[in-house]
Length: 503
Image 1 (tube, rainbow, N blue to C red):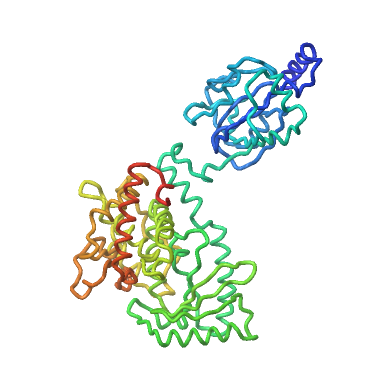
Image 2: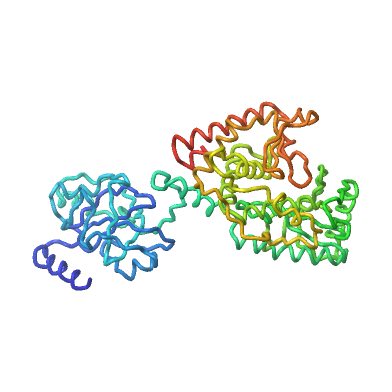
């Protein structure tokens, strides 16, 4: 690399000694190739190269060289390409600074991603993005005339060029990625990161110690999406204080709403007292079907929490969902996407008269149990029917890690994209929501009982057997859900784009 640079340096000294080096550098407008290509001034030539995306950022000037060591720092797992090391992007040529050849400007024309091939530098591929912002396009005249136009301007003001490795998930250019990969990338971007989950567990341990100081028999349980492994980023944490675990030795234990509300008041007073070093702020009691104490954890955690009392149903149902999520990762990946889509289309969920995230999760699960069609095996059976003893244990005996008695292997081998399109088709064209009940417990769709005929949708809670879609009470909102489901299926089929779902 050093000798190559020396060669061109001598070339300029011999042939272009009368003019400053930078005066022979023609500045040109550079289109922004998002997440796919980059331009770097390599000694005397403009070249474009591409490679797998990484996470680092490189800065380069117009007199710098990109060595193999630099490239390896971008992505240590860079793949090799069969192109020659000296290959140049089709449509461009190696160009000496100051050349008047009109064809040398081909590289400045906008190219579609399909017009550019992968190229290799010293056996290492580099996938970057050059952000070049020019004040104005320079007229494509002779290079000397162009240079006279910009000679008095600050070079870096005209072309602030940085080589930045781009994470392709930043904007999800669907036309470059198959739908399956888009779903994978969406999950990585929007699922709750593991480190956030660990922070939540640390904070809950502090709260559990505070609860223990007030009542030595009490325990704090995590439930909801954090336990079930389908949590999205920035989601709250659901907690349940079991005031006396001896009272909840089986599924037959009944929930007493009035007693639960009274206990929450007592815990709130204790959390506010000087006798307790409580990690919570902003304690507010919500008088709902299951009374909830809303709170926010103090520094350094800051995430919100919904705390209930003696509601073991939430713990058991969340553990059931966790079993499905751990048995086949396709469920969690689709679950996160569908919950994000529902959050975008139906703000507020159950609180604003639509259906909540848990209902959408059960709807997806029911589809994966019995919505595949006659010629395709289901993804899941009913785990409650296959492993009945697993869900009949007391709270103390439950394995909250979510391990099944055996390694489950699904007979269904459909891709993520096929399952996602199938889910929206299933909801739009197969299910008669007005007349049926969707049961994860039975892995089936059943005709409703007459007493349930007034519901717009009936999605059975697999533990309590109650309708988790009972918050949907307006026909206008039901029709909105129907329309958005049909629209989502149409967009997926016509665009193969995850982003189109959120437009």
